Length: 419
Image (cartoon, rainbow, N blue to C red):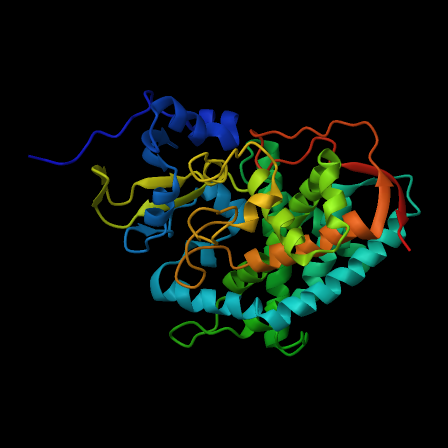
């Protein structure tokens, strides 16, 4: 007798529009209605499986059961990821490419990034003191663009910074969009890939000489397992895979400011400059507020898990937002509570705002350490090094729009640096 079970199944021909309408809540809503951490649906005309819960994370990041190549929809590849980037690789090819990314994220290199970050925060604070009002999200994006380019060894003229910021932002702001906004993201990626590709060619021709440990230098001269240089387009994609995620940290910077405003008692706790509590606060921002809604993979080969059959090449989505708000993992997940991280065991399968599993062999985001350190410095500036007013505005944020950004983009006024 077969031990397999019938997977809960969403009725209907296709539910792609429901996913767009419900955003971060799509999988969580159905996990609740089915009373199941796994269900079957149809997306983009094909069968898909959606999963949640701690055990689902562990199986999803089992590289013997799931693969990433071909999992991302073409519209996401054309805006967010780019073609042939590290996110879409598997096996030894992925491991070899990921090692390059992890070498760029070494403690020494992150320290250099933090030095650049502190200088740029100081420049921004000086500038904001002279402004009637500051739209924090837009200002943070531009600041992070400057930081990303400086750290990655990418030369950019001052007059091009705003356009570059706009295009890098469009990549992650349009990833889930349809219509004109989606095409704006495609245009932005095409434009920047050509620009970075020209830089790659100039580096190889000796016309541009970035510092040796920077992303531009590393990927210009990176060789694959066969000893070949990457083609120009792929090398450009990987350099952009350093720039774009750093600019996207501006979303978290916005949520840091929002948390400080909504939970003023936390600001008092942060005055002591307690490194541990700052880390806990940053982790809670990453858990509490929406960032990635889910991640995708394809079933590598047929297998059965918990009595449910997984067929080769079936699209599978892991509920990232839902897992970070799962009451079976987090006590009172609807509450903002940094103290929950005082006793967090550090499991790679329970806290996955930027993916789960192992860094080297798996697909956990290589830039997670960078994100945390950037957020800690940003938190220090916003809570301890400056004061400002938050005027009346719409600070609500959507759990439908992906990515989610406070509607007002957090406006602050009367910025003054603390002496």
